[in-house]
Image 1 (cartoon, rainbow, N blue to C red):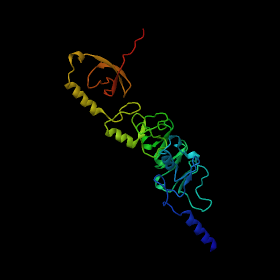
Image 2: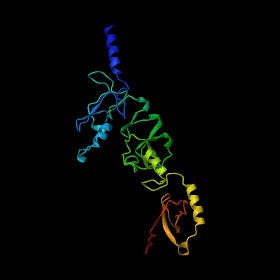
Image 3: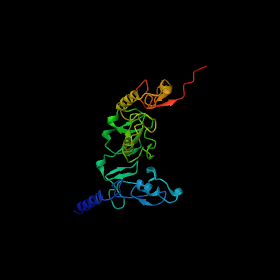
Length: 261
């Protein structure tokens, strides 16, 4: 009877406070002590947010997951389970298992969304939705850079990311804001990120209805197409220059090619 009571008490301690504690980032039943400043926070993101707004710029710093030491899923002192999901490699706890957390050995970090819904692209160096398997343009280490809009590092960002047609990536929120502001080119490579065929047709109609002055009517310029990277010589028009290869107006004028002597 005593053993049964002890087992019941241990089980109660194990599940004590489940989903009752944590921060805006994670639900967990423990805090971490940052070895860099000896302060206590719910998670490294809470630490980094607090440290990034310190009044003295030289005091600002970040805590990376590998710097967190001496972790275990169950407290050796009180027997409480720190988090239903636990990764010893990432030093990571989370009670909210509905996120579908899983550790990717190739990425070296934990991700959310369910392992069955993602695959690791070796060339891009990150996990993508299975909907993008054989359906995206690979860019080496595409996520190991900063979002070109907000400049937050993408690889371990908590925000959703978007893979554009060109293979480059940015935050979904930043992508949608860019589109809402009528910016339809990748900030990194300048390729069109959406289907622009209707826009190109409208420009065709506007150019046909807009006759250039006599001095410019037969003037030619060399252009580089941002969409197909082709260089061609075309007639100049104030409304835009059309690529003769892919029929895109996403072009820019360049210096004429230098012919070999």
